[in-house]
Length: 134
Image (tube, rainbow, N blue to C red):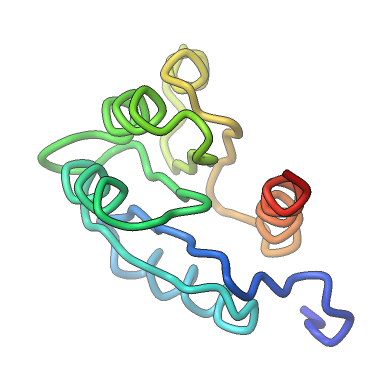
């Protein structure tokens, strides 16, 4: 991925990555390293809710299947308390009706694993550009 065109530079933006899988964390860190955004990690939905309550977060990259609190419930709480925060749900497991549940919980976008790098960056860029324009 070529970051030299400045298309994916989000300096001053904070992205919360909610993911309990270490391999996925490594992927997201590598994918987002050159964007100059601040990255914060949470290992479950419960941690994510607390981080959002105590930090300025521009976008949440939320896994669905996690211990303690799943991504759907965490999204519901985050969007109820902070409706302007963008939540992009990402999951490896597509169960019947899961996307609908995520959208009903308030997520802004739903993407499936394996995640294509350009699609991930374009999706985040779309939402962070909208935040910048406000």
